[in-house]
Image (cartoon, rainbow, N blue to C red; front, side, top):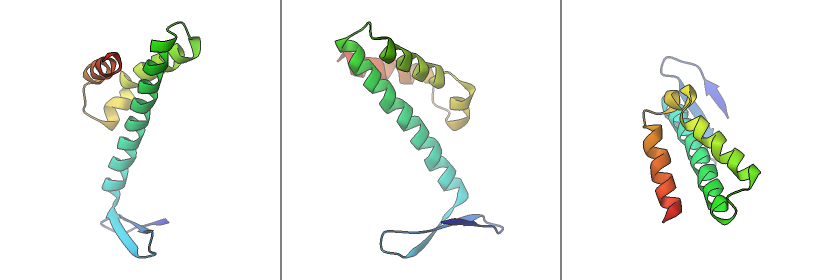
Length: 97
């Protein structure tokens, strides 16, 4: 994989069949941002799941707090326009029900 620098800034890569494909760089960055957020959501769900079993577990409480801190951070605001409070609330309701 490599980046081909030109006016349009396209990203060149090979798919599973070995055929070259091109995507705009903006698409790649958006996909990366989505992957970062989905990773944090998965980690938060996992923490809430284990905290239902053992609410006093320090490790999972720390992970939950780190995820909430990420959701409320400036970095999260750069990655998406979603409201962090809404995301946290929905994930908590999902874990409770």
